[in-house]
Length: 259
Image (spheres, rainbow, N blue to C red):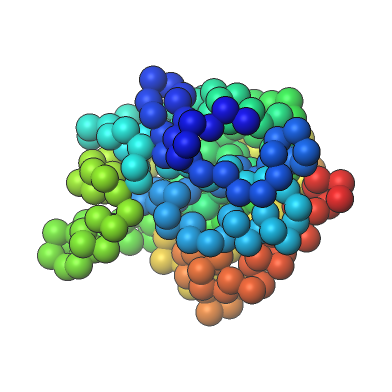
């Protein structure tokens, strides 16, 4: 494992990163890919708890421009999730990860899909929380509402607890999604190339996406796809329905890891 304290170097950036549990040579590694406004800290204690109950390692990192990672000045390219998926092998290599189970939330789930669509060696499974595979009107409306909350509410203050460059993190994400050109963004063509099992998790009350995303994943991926649809749950199942979500993820990870 080549983490240097609380960071690793990949893609010309120093990325905030932490490790929990077993070393890469001792067990598969769960790799946590955060949401569009997420970071290491927004996962809270979920990675450590899943490492404890599964016996696997857990790599949690903040992408460039988020958390305590090197800042990235907006605007972000509209293909920023593709770019992050292409960088992921360098992140895994820097951390010494050889056998991975990707656990992605929102944008992170989309990045996981794109990476898995390249049929990488050593990938054992995907956990997709609230994934996006195409743009829905509900997503655009909620992201526009987030812009208003950032400018006139307390959203900026709340996000500043998690990001060194909070304006760069927010506007890089928000302006990309609200760019008219982003309406054509679609990664369904990656799904047929995925060769590992999938656990897809969606909250019924998610303001950023609907069950149509999970339907598309199940329809497009050729391998086994398990669905977990949660009532009374918004965009973050690991926070809104913690017990049910962690139980399902732990069961899936143990099976994918062969333990």
